[in-house]
Figure (tube, rainbow over the protein chains, first blue to last red):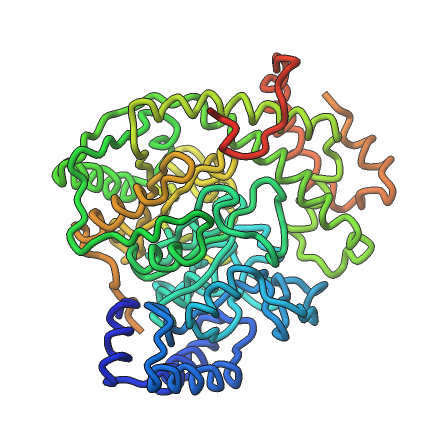
Length: 450
Length: 55
């Protein structure tokens, strides 16, 4: 069910907030052994909050579309009185004394926190195969990763445990799990959603945003958390007439799994059939964005976590190797990476003179197996982290908004993700295009076999 | 190119020897791709602070 459908059931008294909360808590508890999507489940607090929100509705107090709606927050987002581990041993017992701004905003809107979702250690990786809290599993195939780092949020949505979740995205960490799990993930424009109270990772690359079961549900959340938001939620029959959509003719279509490419090409045809003016575009060198993005991220994360390196044994092996790499980057190289980033951003911004939106695959492949180290694209072998991030990271470097959404399924019944990108602060364009395509694809809301 | 192995040994604390295979080769590859990108940055170029600076 979508958030609007759940809201209708609550307001027509077909369902109480208490009943909805109990159902959700039961689903979450029953799924834990199979999926491990949650690090902490906040049952008592959720029940107490449900009673308050039921009472409000009975008194005619309606906080809006999120009133009584269950939500889960990624466990690197501070929650007052509820431990926030960042998926790390080091913060395993850390209990914030205040909520992150996004948690406060969604609480005020009436959402009910069900728990804190699992993630890659420190949100620094794409597998969510966490050495301290266990592997989060993909509901479409529990032998596969859900993607990361917001893997628990995406897995919980894909399994229809909850209708809404939050995530963070430093190099694709909202969009990669959205792609692998067949849900919607919005990485807003840099700094469009407050990062206050969110455990930082890459200081100039971090973004916070919603994951949801549909584009319209993601739009509802975005309308409540965006700085200078328009409140736009796509209407029932959003269309693409007149929208200028660019499809890159290099990089973003290279080394892509054949089934992903087929689905992507079909999505492009759908956009054209819906009235969009679709053109092939030659972008500046997106590979350079990934190089700059990796330099910046390695240095920023190692700076942030340097003071914990006297506890090496408390880090997972992959994160520790990245932290050590970052320590070896000279300050002058970091500064020049940020200066080169300015030049690249200036160069890339020119594409918006002729376009409203870009369309690319979200990830070049479907979800890899847990423990899989590399993925083959024909004769090209690539490590899983590099492959998963290479289509997503460029838009962290540019700070542009990007939306990942399902556009099809593979022959193994694994979700295939589409990515839409717009100029800074044009999330409404993404949401409009995403909703129109979602209606046409007809794959949103599909549920994995249990 | 930077002698990363020497640098790793000179850090305080040094990068543990057993981690070097996961640290040095990927960083050498990244540095090789990075150097050409910063060779000709004009002197008046500032650090990136957000997409609003693009206009």
